[in-house]
Amino acid sequence: MFIDSDHPLLVHGSSDMGFNPYEIRRDFPILEREVNGRRLVYLDNAATTQKPRQVIEAIREYYEKYNANVHRGFHTLSQEASEAYEKAHETIAKFINAYSWEEIVFTFNSTEALNLIAYAWGFKNLREGDEIILTVMEHHSNMLPWRNIARLKNAKIKYVDITDDGLLRYDQLEEMVSEKTRIIAVTMMSNVLGTVNDIKRIAKIAHSVDAIIVVDGAQGVPHLPVNVRDLDIDFLAFSGHKMLGPTGIGVLWGKRDRLDEMMPFKVGGDTIKDVTLDDVVWQDLPWRFEAGTPNIAGGIGLAVAAEYLMRLGMDNVRQHEIELTSYTLKRIREELSSDVEYYGPWDARIKGGVIAFNIRDLHHHTVGKALDMLGIAVRTGKHCAHPLHYRLGINGTVRASYYIYNTREEVDALVEALKTIIGLKETLKTTEEPDVCPGG
Image 1 (cartoon, rainbow, N blue to C red):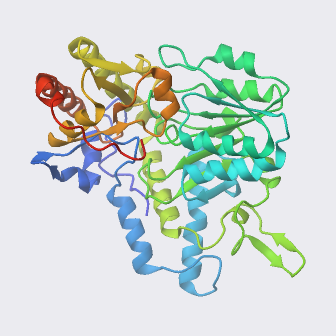
Image 2 (image 1 turned 45 degrees about the vertical axis):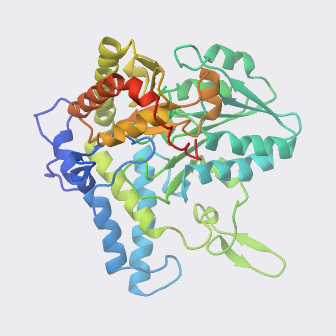
Image 3 (image 1 turned 120 degrees about the vertical axis):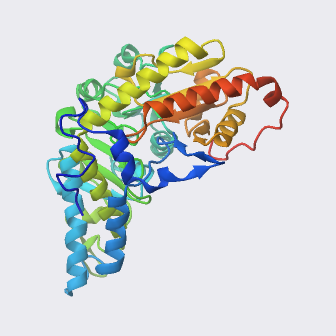
């Protein structure tokens, strides 16, 4: 289930980063495939990451050897499944340095986790006239739940703007906060600009007026060392599939006192200790928030993914992405600046491995399709961050995003492919635009 200490991805003494991306790639079968006759260059990691053999094997082993429901049986298979599922909560608690595994609630994804917070904490605690502060760089999943709750409770939404370089306006945030502020909901890392926000600073601002801070960690947690105790935040949401884990599994972490004051968002099986016709006694944390049969295999797979990343070291993961991002931005600035419009900070130390750009005079979908023809997978559209794109004055971007298995050679492949596309710009402008992705 876990990675051996002599696994080849741990290259002792051969890399300042502590791991070797070329060895890491051997754990990812999908990276061996070809697309349109070319070796796949997968640069869509902000949408979802690929899965290592260790995760795939752990899920297969569950279904083949101890497939059973959890918390519902005394037979051997059920006991083994329950133990593995509960241990998965412990592993994730370790991954983010939670105070206790009981603070780890498994959800379907980040979106469900954020909705859970909005409806289970926000609906109970917000009053008419209260204020919720968001930012213009939020993913829809950390914007729309709060807008819904604000309408239901007659609360007010305020938005913090960004600078021309894509950084959060902290001066504006500090001016905006007041005694009416109850919630500040902010992304740890923008899924478009790559901007890494100063969460610890924002938490201090929130707590100075007794507000809570809710952090969307969907992009941040897979790429940055995260210590919830040090950050002193109230809630954190993130998804498994963006950090080498399977789809259909996410995490809600909350401080215990915050979770204790929340009513279950969904109720039913496994959320109760006892039910009569007149009353209900809710289950202990975290089970009161995990209604019904959970994604057992997903939780087990996510734990293996977290173990994999912890073996690599999240500081090393971060350093690897800084180097890839810095190299990409250098080549864009020096070789493509006359044809490519880049969005976000130019300093790789304050952003994640996300490169959002457009080729001037070409639709982003056209560029994305052309890259696919060259074997390079990227994302195009508004990336579930429509307000941010409107703030930037554009209708979409091409987004390349990196992870642990990406290499400098793949950055080179991207840059050379963009040069080819630019050389064909006049021809491509006359082609029919691809259909717009409904998700933006």
